[in-house]
Image: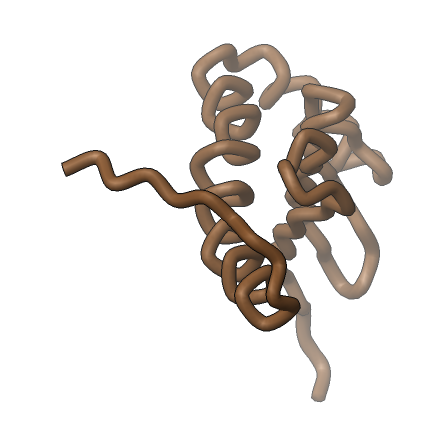
Length: 102
């Protein structure tokens, strides 16, 4: 079909069990081309097209938006990875410690 295609993909990438190497990546895609990406390792938006460069500059000038994106490592990635990691550890028979905060 003719038309435009826009999507946003977020990824959380890590290899350590304690999530110390967790990276949050937020991609903005238009017609299958990456336009802008936020990478928590870089700490800012990077543009890959003319529009993406302009968007990245504007978004990087917004401290509130940058703070929100940077916080996604903890609030989104680690928050969602911890239950999955616990399930994997449970199935491998390895010991893990949980703390009851009640």
